[in-house]
Image 1 (tube, protein in one colour):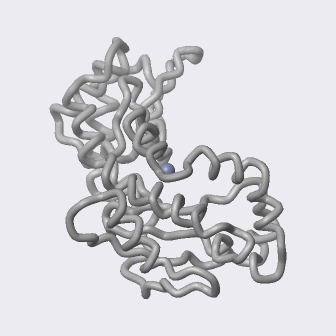
Image 2 (image 1 turned 30 degrees about the vertical axis):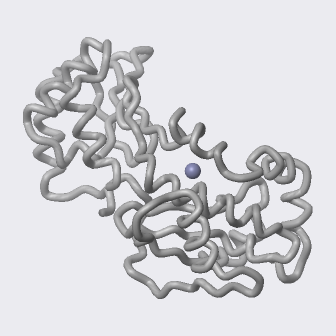
Length: 236
Ligand SMILES: [Zn+2]
C-alpha cells in the first residue's frame, strides 16, 4: 500500500481536527518511523500524525486525539492499530518482480536455504533476490551508507544489495546479511510507548548475535567493508 491521500483521508482528518480542537495544528506525514509526535513549542501546538491513521476507525481516532492532547502512554487501541498496519508503512512496493538469485559470485537461493536450515525450522517459504543497482546519479551520490538488505513482509521477500555480490566480500558476511533479513520475518517490529516502530528490538539483537562468527564479522565489517565495496569494477 502506498500512503497517499485517498477518500478516507478527509474523513479521518475531519474527525481528528474536530477532536483536537483549535489548540492544535494537524500535519499529516508519510514518516515511516515516527507515527505520531506533538510539538508544544508552537502555538497552536503541532501534532504530526502519520497518514496511516486515514485507515483508523472512530474509536482509534478518539483515543489518538486524547493521547495528543493529554500525553502519557500510547493508548492500547492506537498501539495495536499501528502494529496491525505497520506493514503499510513499508516503502512503495514494486510488485512481484522477477527474482534474480544467481549473482556473479554468490547464489542467494542456495545461501538462504542453507541459513534457514541452520537457524530456523519449518519449510523455507521466503523468496530472495539481488536488488538492482541504483541509477547512475544515485550511485555517485551514495557511499556514505548502503543498505545491505531489506525484508518486505507483504511480499515475504528478502532483497540483497548487489554490491555484496563481490569476491572481496566474504561469503560468511553475505550469509550474515541474509540471516539478518530473514530474522526480520521471525521477529516482527514492535511499537514503543512513544509510537515509534522498532525493527531491531532487544529480542532481534539477541538472536542476531547467535549467528556463527557474529563478532568477527562485525569487526570485519567495521575494518574492511568499505574498502571491499570500493574495489571496482565487479563491486560497482
Ligand atoms: Zn534490519
